[in-house]
Length: 142
Length: 421
Image 1 (spheres, rainbow over the protein chains, first blue to last red):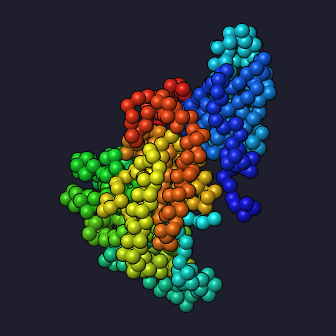
Image 2 (image 1 turned 180 degrees about the vertical axis):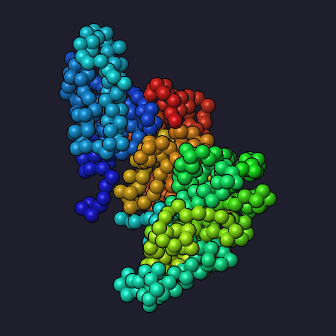
Image 3 (image 1 turned 120 degrees about the vertical axis):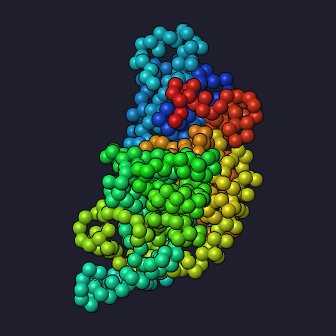
């Protein structure tokens, strides 16, 4: 592949071509689906949560290469984190872990953050006992 | 891996004959056409030959009606601004089709900021110009009508002869953008009744860096580039002689081979669409069906529930080069204005691909594309929440509605909090 040019860096291309955690979770504890008003992409993240910690995460994305890579990377990063930690997750972490995204594609990583937070909100709604943890964290920004 | 190039609308390979013709004009015949010595006179002669070859391709009366520019964008800028400025005292109104190329639309927008007004004539869902609306749009202040021959996105062939007659009746010059048709469809500027016509040799196996603008002698135009008196004073700047010489040869070969090229790509176009349509569910052809109303080399497709850039990237990784009008591909994050003008649902515009065939594509290429693309669609649909939600009846198909579930656009608006554009 050395003589092949790619639109994105090798990490982004890898997550686009071989996405991690693609799919849905049976009996998910929280599901978030969000759309990007900017471009029309749609992202869905499902979470399995055990004892306040994200045990498993899956994504499905209708969107471009960087949107697919962003959701793949986001699900990789958040596995094992506590709800509190996950509520403080930002798109910058996705961008960094992917080794950067073109400026026009940064909004794809924002969509991943929003999908994750929507899934956490869904979880908190289903488990009000965790509302305290959620309230203590930074507010979810859309 | 097979390599299939399906972006001939963007660029074509330079023919060996064309390259051979260009080579001596870099190293031996390097003179400037404005020079009065042997070196200059030699290239001046070559320039005249190329002008004649261009005139022949579009059946212009005289080679003196051919101007060389740097590309299609410059030709469009010169046609629109050059005519507008030359006729400023007559009126400041323009009429264009809503689906013109950005070089036309953006030139018009530039003039609108300076006090001109413009009527954008709508098109039907397959991109055909509303002829009655065009006729009604022409006023005594109209100084130019611009309608493309073939649409650059969706391949629709416009009724140029009828447009030409309407313009002639009102005494308004007609500019026809032939960038997507030259070399692939016969062009007769006299039959068109066109005052101005533009096209680019890099679309028919000539080099980049040359644009052609035909201007009927009766049409008034002023220069928009100021400098020397090259190109009859209408386009200042040193002529790109090697590229112009090569372009002339490309035009000559295109004229000779046009019937064969046209028949070849038309057969592949029909096979490709038939293959895609029968293999992939929920796929739509944008623009007219292959036939007399569509350019023979273009297919513009929308595949539902998946996005265009992902399709493009996976095609590229399989050796297939295509283009897309999806918002994710554009730097402005907006869908192609042509797809918006034909009223295409946003969900379908997002899943858009543009495939343009060429003379070197084969039946094997087409079959490989059908087989590979159907696998790509399956892969992306597996990853798409929309496909899953469609299968579960939560959202409905735009292409073949099943009557249950909300529309994609409604769903997208619900979860993003804003309407999709």
